[in-house]
Amino acid sequence: MKYAFYPGCVARGAAPELFASTIEVARRLGIELDYEPMRGASCTGAGVLQEKNQRLGDTLNARTFAMAEKAGLPLMVICSTCQGVMSQASKRFKDDPAYLAEINKDLAEEGLQYKGTVEPKHLLWAIIEDIGIDKLKAQVVKPLKGMKLAPFYGCYIVRPSAALGFAEHPEREDSLEQVIKAVGAEVVDFRGKTLCCGFPILTINQNNALKMVANHTLEAKGNGADAMVTPCPLCHLNLDGYQPAAAGLRKQPIDMPIIHLPQMLGMAMGIEPKALKLNKHLVSTKKLLSDLVLAP
Amino acid sequence: MDVTLNVKRYNPDAAKPASYNQEYRIDLEDGSSLLDGLIKVREEMDGTLALRCSCRSAICGSCAMRVNGRAVLACNTKMKDVMPKDGSPVKVEPAGNMGVVKDLIVNFDVFWGKIKAVKPWLQPEGPVPQGEYLAPNEAMLHLAGVMGCIMCGACVSDCTVLEVDKNFLGPAALAKAYRFVGDPRDAHEKDRLKDLTKYGGMWDCTRCMQCVQVCPKGVDPMGRIMKMRDKALAAGYNNTYGARHALAFTDLVRHGGHLDELRLPIKTFGIFNVKEMLKLAPIGMRSQMVGKVPPLFPKPIPGIQNVRRIFEKVEAKR
Image (cartoon, each protein chain N blue to C red):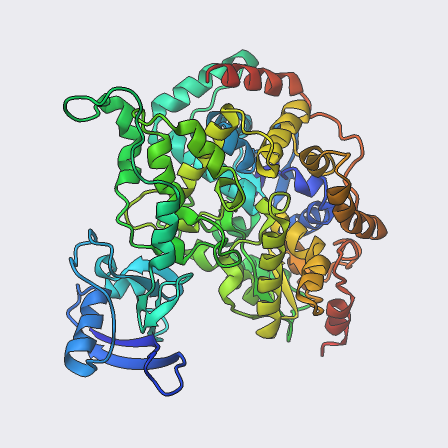
């Protein structure tokens, strides 16, 4: 299946391992990622632009939607935050056609017009809804047996559920657990899985952001997780990058590897850890990988 | 309908007060609410179970509590909607982020203290009118939703910032603040905004949308906080890290079309802010050690002039 591919800023910036592992995994799942129509697409605004000027963020997202629509392709994202921000904008366009018509006036100069047909879809949802869990299972050559993985969704892919189509797609609610099970790993449930990682306030109130990192990683660890898996690169940046600082704050080691969704899929597909860039994490994934090698 | 409730209980008068869980198995009519179930337990099985409730119509705001980990009003939650598919018990706990008084009753003192802290009354200036202080309907419409708040505390219960920082004003108080910041009859919008930009105020919200999700009345507290951020920036309260972060982010997207992770914290803190620059050093070094550094000079996206034009056009409309 072919998608217009919107990788988002972080996969092309501070989390290149997300981009690399997505490309590897997509190929095996028969997903064709067409980046060409999205080459000129901008940042979604990540909720930050929206706090300054919501209409500005909405116009940029309408522009991105128009590009995918023009290419006649469904739109795929690989970031919970991109998903949520786009879904919220999409809902506003659907609820208020007059608003979209106003926004289209600002796109006209570029020769773009958004008709309202695009449903942005995260790789996580696409696997379940478009590709099929069975097709994923068929690609698993090295089931992650014995590996205990704690899901960590990222706020924007779970709330507000009214904008994310949970009523029409109830399977989205536990989508991450479904793919963890499909690759043969054990799901470690924990309260923090749908809570905030703290990334949005990292530069505003770092202490609070670090407390959130410590709470979630230690809770997952306490429940027996070997690693946490996330579809959100911003959560990854905070939970992985700032975990050493969070450990310092709590004065106890954490050592909880945070892996991106496609990295987990790739491990089960037998893709080389280097190709998945599992060596690019700040919290080492070495033990996780050696456990996998030693697994019966 | 056969239901098992697993209720988190706490009795302050016990010899050694500690919370514990107790299960109750009850038979209910199909359309019953969670509150119907709890009242049935209290009236027919265990008179010691303590809970607050009154109107049973989602208007008094008394019965907020957590069900299966999420804040709800017990009276407008259908039991069958919260019964886990696997047949496990419905988990009922007191609301979070407030101290438990007994069983499902929590202490609202801090909640009310924060509401009072935002001065939730009209502060008009000028001659006192003969009748009421009037405002045109259309100027008040945007406040209708926020005035629907019933002070149930569901948003406060599930606020992820309050969980780590008791100093945060929280979603209910900030939504209440917006109700007066946005009131055309109030003469103290700027003073209010200035106060709300301090530590614990609008910029400490992490935008997790828990409050938006759990509010039973559609108040959209986070949406109100975002509007206040916009108003604070427009009023020139630009020198907090929150404000600087929003402005730096906007500038970077205008310039390059995408997020520039390297420059965002530097622009937010200011390059001569030695304390913050030193705090950034460890993650910078660790990232470099694993060979993961964002591009030093990221290229603007193709067609950046179109993005910049949109910025100009849309910003000019404000």
